[in-house]
Length: 545
Ligand SMILES: NC(=O)c1ccc[n+]([C@@H]2O[C@H](COP(=O)([O-])OP(=O)(O)OC[C@H]3O[C@@H](n4cnc5c(N)ncnc54)[C@H](O)[C@@H]3O)[C@@H](O)[C@H]2O)c1
Ligand SMILES: O=C(O)C[C@H](O)C(=O)O
Ligand SMILES: [Mn+2]
Image 1 (cartoon, rainbow, N blue to C red):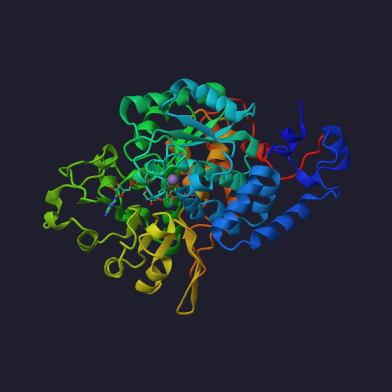
Image 2: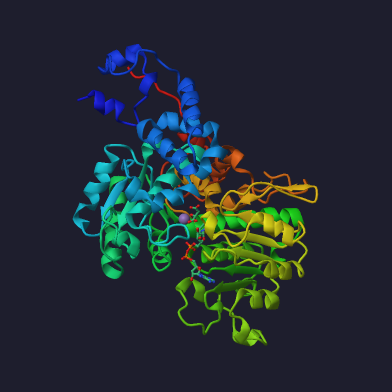
């Protein structure tokens, strides 16, 4: 039965004041709206003026989330027009503030599914209720143990799943009615949340081990059963679980971990862009990853794959890596290595001063890296001394401080340009403004997986991919090559967010083509480009009869 509420409170159907008089009549909602009928453009102009009147970024975000909760078409029309301005508001870094305050600011569940580890028997019902009959093609799930670099945020982390999905639609054009954000509430070790009466998640410590993995398994089974056409995207799981989960499911159906693979992709694409500028060969680089966690090792593995595709043996390729974590440079005898770290250790016998290699300054001095990636969550750790030392031994140091949000970045782009006298080739995790230095304007690429996962995911869904493999990931990493004009002084290593929609489309087409080339499509598809074009949703009102 249609009721006024079932239309005006349904963000997938609601047009608000844009319902024509005929539609109002047909739907039985005559008189429930002011009489003047607005066009979508008019609504967008009006909403943008309200957005601009908000005092700060969090207020702006709250306003946009309200709009999102009321009317998805209007929200995405507006985001389409203002993508560069909206990205840092709906996504990183402002999403970080909203996650910290989620329970206090809560007004709406945003059509997410909330799975509780204490209620495993209701996992299927939870997904079904949240989907509410919609044809779900894309699920972003988080257990929020490692939200950006801010640690454990329990159920509050659902906002990152919502935010990632907003970027998917804005960038690639997935129909917002076909997506489902999922929170797995496995408890939290965040004492501030546990002590907070208003905290909306389970008030107990995080559950690990068999009980946890059993819930993950039940979730995966229910998800695949209910939404067999869907792609499953894992986000911000903790270091001890992320890779384990990915390894368990990656060959079974279309799935990926954004922090491991999405980040690996954007960093490799950024390095390829940087090498295009410096005209150097990837096989001549020495890679230092500072923060050898989920993202750091995902990046190392993606670069390793590239080196092997460029002709190096596995053994030769691994010699190009220096993985650094809390313990310093990781050696084969370093205690407490994770499974992923074990593949990238060095031997003490390779260095005269192995015992001194416990801090970044000493390691840079000894190793002379040409590429330094920060995924450590440790702000300001790429110091002037370290960066100058690195720059003294390589013509164009490639430096990517990627830790998010803003307050956790290893360095700022402006400092890196200054300390290296304009030589550094930089990408940052959060958006960075242009840097003017000695008469040159340096554009800074955003080394954020948001540049990659929308196109990757859309291409996989459009091509009905059975799985995602290394071949497709590699094709996607190379897809952005040539988009940036590297002949310009101060060119960025990655394309600008202002071109997010066009390069996401290109990426999706390349991904879909790779799937078809490998015959990994579930359904017959003749033309990858056409499949991508056919699936693209545009924020326009459809007429209601
Ligand atoms: N820009 C992007 O697209 C992107 C993508 C993923 C992650 N990240 C950022 O990378 C950071 C790490 O994320 P993650 O998912 O890999 O988390 P993680 O917890 O898996 O990894 C962080 C690693 O840093 C290490 N670390 C902590 N203190 C250190 C220190 N003093 N010296 C050296 N290493 C130290 C930890 O031991 C851990 O191994 C976060 O800030 C996250 O926002 C950015
Ligand atoms: O969410 C982001 O901004 C990127 C990345 O997935 C992260 O965890 O930091
Ligand atoms: Mn993440």
